Length: 377
Image (cartoon, rainbow, N blue to C red; front, side, top):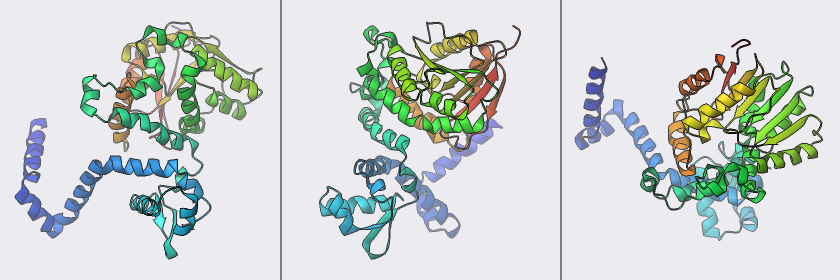
């Protein structure tokens, strides 16, 4: 059966590749619509980088916030946006073409369906700005795939992935972790909202957030579940930032961050649930297995692990996994996107049971797995 399917697909592709068939199908009424749709999709792939730069320019000019209170005329926009008239008109029309903006009556421009969700969305805005580093590393994709990329802007941005012993997690200083730690803190809401809507922590007493950064998720937990005791574990310089955030939020009596290396150092004990949010896709399989073993060891018997992150093979979001995160993590220098099945296998090998997928409103942001440590070995 598989051989027949492969034969059919090869025949289909050879037929579609024929210029004669392409000309015929573009004219034939029953295939004309499909041909035009496919041609548009192929053009979008080719032009995708241009679209992303239009988006970046709009963000850099704060255009979505400027239009957040309603449409403005071209002349009004010209007065507040530092571009020459011809450049501004070109940008606005490009943004209209990709649905970031809409052209209204009397030469006015307003937010489009894709631009409106960006208003006040600090997480997405900061990710868009951060992609400047990614674009730099993707300038030569073949060099990146060969592993001989000399730019390494992303690897420098995420210093904890470096193989340089002087940049080991325990030795990183506050100024070396500040940029990426701030970005992670600003974008944490993309996943933490999904987690808090999918799972109630009311049944737990103590939460340990491993790789929790500056503590934004812990602070959100504290506000929603006032009875929880909260712990966080991250590299020492980041843990210090988290403790400062807990002090500022007046949570020092309930929340504490611990510094160390979660691959080699023992994790804080006493938690009946561990959260692992957007962590494992940054690391190779050997490190992930060691981390899961350390979490299993630290958990109380009967305790739970809640793992949340974007996963490869997510239904309806296939481009996000292997295409976007596949290359993002390659540029970063370590890690890979994993499917739900791959992660479930690693979690089970660590000893966890009762593994189940929790519902997620926006699977693009994260898929969530919940599992337990057995009460008895």
